[in-house]
Length: 342
Image (tube, helix red, strand yellow):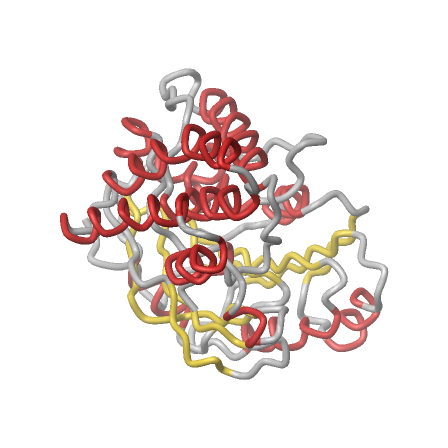
């Protein structure tokens, strides 16, 4: 087995998915052009932008392959871009993010014959591109990450879209990602967890991309979640629907060989579900309902985290109880302390 792919021989495509992010495209594309290991191809999929994204790319970046399509969401953009990929590996870069100069070289060195995905940490930047001096996630899983996914529905720790590089031959077994009226986004979810069923995951602890936050830093620090997804009440229902679609998709591309559990476990998401529901509840009866709906699944997700020791697991179970029972004025900062790593 190779220790790592030769940086001289490695062929890595970068697919940039864009929708109305003309103001960030230069930073994204320039970051790929500045790589110490040049990308073998740069593909920009414009998902029906109504700003001047297309005109900007045509005028400034003749070396980029531009694909225009009607607006259909992130999943359709991934599918369209992947059709054009001709390299051994691929990175799907969000148009508002940017790669560090050494990203592709380090990715190439991290791939070995049994690795289907390499992921790496991210540096948070402001909407204006200023470094916020925050590196996340605190922990990255690696190895046979599909084992717990099959056994328990446990989602392994991974960065979002731009923090992942994939072996194209493995993705070809999975694509296209299913698109329907319920799920047009979260393409990275399908790739990140689906590919773990086909081989091993390797982790690079160094931050290799910049993740842009679209809210003011002060606002971000006061929210329950730092990410660009909205902190709305129905996140739980959306996640459950996504998991059911994901299960069906996995059964399809594995030809029935893999059947995932009916529920998924992910403390990163489930701590937010519990907090949002508890803070939304205004009566004791509603809080009891939240307890019945969320507490068991949060505890289960905590128990399945390999990077948590016993003390931390016990502390987090106590945290969940306090968020459910304390007055909102106290529960909110307590919830934010755990849910928002910023």
